[in-house]
Length: 87
Image (cartoon, rainbow, N blue to C red):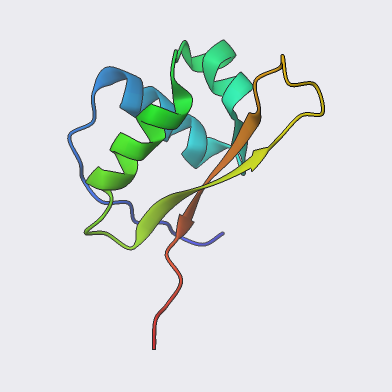
């Protein structure tokens, strides 16, 4: 298995919980972060975490699946990945 060296960052307790989940699971949805991590605003928290990761080789990528029902909240999918190499 590949050794992943993550940067040492001072996370808030919520950020640390989400970071741990993202390092242990290939992908997590906003629904899973709300349910398993007790996060109220996953997208906002991920944005703050990405700002802290800005100087590292890591980033939390997000894709959003919109629902056909406008009453439902779109589901976000989050992955912790290495940033693409730029040439």
